[in-house]
Image (cartoon, rainbow, N blue to C red; front, side, top):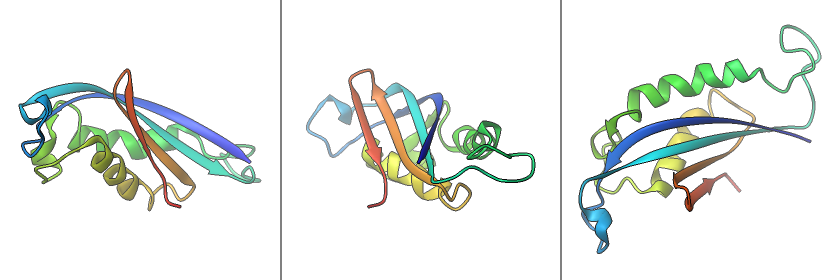
Length: 122
């Protein structure tokens, strides 16, 4: 079994108005997104021979999503929710990437250096 990880950084803001914590006020984070791919075997032919998937392919799928919905964006607006929690965001990203990255295993989203969530289908 192979596992590949590709990481992406972005800055974004949000608020959780329903929260009883300080997260209810507008604030921002420097997020770290980790995309994990799992596969049983390597490609046998073509440009990706002896690879699970080219890291550039992962970037070509993930980077436009980050640019459109996340980087320097207000997540309440771009994700159309009043509760863009890190859990919600990780699942949202997974669901958008899975059709284009069929071997996608999980999404880990670091909201801070000490807080992260991982989403994967069971």
